[in-house]
Amino acid sequence: MTATFFARPADEQAVERASSTDPDNPFLTARYLQSQQSLEREAWLLSVEDSGAVSAGALCFVERGRLRCALSIPSSPPVAADSPFWPGLRAYIDDQGITDLELSTFASPESRIPPWDGEYERVDRTEFAMLLKDVELLPRVSKSHRERVSKGRKKGLIVRRGHSDAAIDAHIALHINSMGRRKSRGEDVTLEFERAGSAALLASGAGELFQAMLGEHVASSLLILRSATGAYSESSGNSKEGMSIGASHFLRFESALTLQAEGAEIFYLGGVRPQEEGLRAFKAGFGTTPIDTQSVSAYVGGPMRRHLSSAFQWLRSAAASQTR
Image (cartoon, helix red, strand yellow):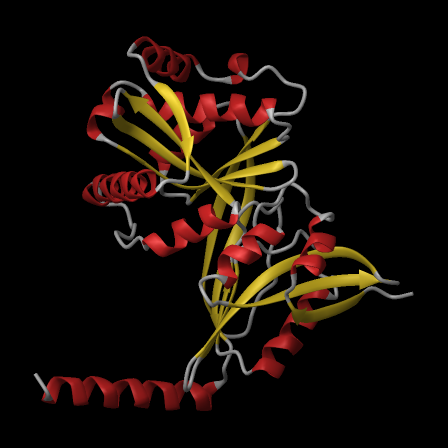
C-alpha cells in the first residue's frame, strides 16, 4: 500500500488515534481540540495514513471571511520534504479556498518546511526541550540558574497549581507585564493577550497553571499544556519582584521536577528567534536540547483574490474615514 494524505473534520476519536504518532505533542490531543472548538474554531485533522494506520498528523484551524480564508497549523508534523503530506496539504488548500497560510512548529521535532508559492515570511526558530526521562535534572542546569533556583527557595517561594479565575487573571497580568519589559528592550513582541484562549485551555484540561507564590503574591506564572508524555510552556509572566528573587528560574525548574514525577518525558520551554539572544541563554541554561525549526507565512489565494481583498479593504477604510 501507499501512504496517502487525508483531511477530515476533527473529532476526538480521530485525534486520539493520530496523537499516538507523536505522544510528546500537546498540540495534537483531544483536550487541545476541545479547547479550540469551545472557541468556535473550525478544526480539521490532517494525516498521512497507510492501510488505515496513521503515520503522521496535525490539527489545523480555518477562519472563513468574505474574501479571505485563513488556515493555521500550530504544530507541523515531523515529515520529510517528499512526504505526501505536503502535496496533500496544497490540494486541501485549493479545495477549501484558503488564502492565508500560517505554518508553525510548536513542539515539533526538528524539521524543515518546503518552500511555498506566495511565501512572504520564513522565520528560523529554535525550540528548547528539557529531556525528563531517566535523567537527574539539577546537574544539567547551569551554575547561574542553580543559584537563582536556590535563591527562590530561600525566599520562601512555593508552587501552586490551579485553574481559578483569580489565577488566570494573575497569569494574564504578569504575561502582559513581561511582554512590556521585552518590548521596552526593543524586542518585537505583542502586548495583546486574550483571556478566552487561556480559559479554554484550562477548562478543557489541555493546560494547567503553575505559579510561584510568595505568600499571596504570584511572582511567576506558567501555562503548561500537556500530552501523554510531553509538556509545553504555552505562555508565562513574571512580576518585577519575582524577577529579583529568581522566581522565573525557580518555577520552571520546580515545574520540570513535577512533570518528571508525573511521567512526562519532555518539557518544551518554547521557541526563540535568532535575534533573541537573552531569551536563548535563559532557556539554554536549563540544560535543554535545542531543536531547529521554522515557521512560514504565505498568501496562497492567487493574484485575483489578493486584488479583490485589497480593494475591499481600501473601500472599508475609506468608508470608515468618512464617518469620523
